[in-house]
Length: 309
Image (cartoon, rainbow, N blue to C red; front, side, top):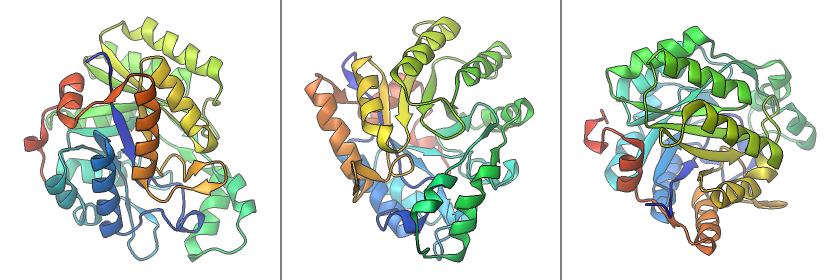
């Protein structure tokens, strides 16, 4: 499957707010519809957060997840990947609650604590749809996304009996070394999935030299054949960086969580629109999107039948 590329799609996230894009899915029905459309467009993995249906505010409530997970599970063969990141304003327990209840095939896992900010975006918005949004965005200059070594170990150990594997999100070079630490502790076993993330304010910058260095560091720490790697980049960096990942033989992640645009100055009208764009680009390189079954085989996942939704 050397020409196969796993396309992940992150449907809604927790940092963008409804004012920023009318196309950002907020309600369970919207999240389900856009997830199914993205899967049909070629995304093998669907990465999911939940939002308060009335306001769009991020929530970790399993009851809200339960309003869209069964629908997506029933209507697609996609691998469902639940967040354990939630938002920087949630406790670790809140962030992990849905994963504990539903025991998905995959979860995301941030590999360290970090500043995580989008406050510069507040200056570009004149009128907000919901009262919570402005304070959430402006106050992100004081957000710390917490994932200490103890937190990470707790998440890994809590989910181990469920057979859930992780999208290990690495926002900087140090996060790769943190992942290596957990491999040494035998809490992470091959094959594992490394998501290299660029362009978040608080993380490593979206520069080609950084991508090359992150990949070389991962190769040195983990060894060829032990891991699969993927790239996502925030905002305007999204398509150039995932294209570069494709050129280098990596996997890719798109979605409105990472960028609300399809091209400079033009909002993406759906997650599927981004999936179709990167699929076209990859096809020009001779690559094909991995099917969900192929992604499960590549990543060593437990299978769709072994979840609780």
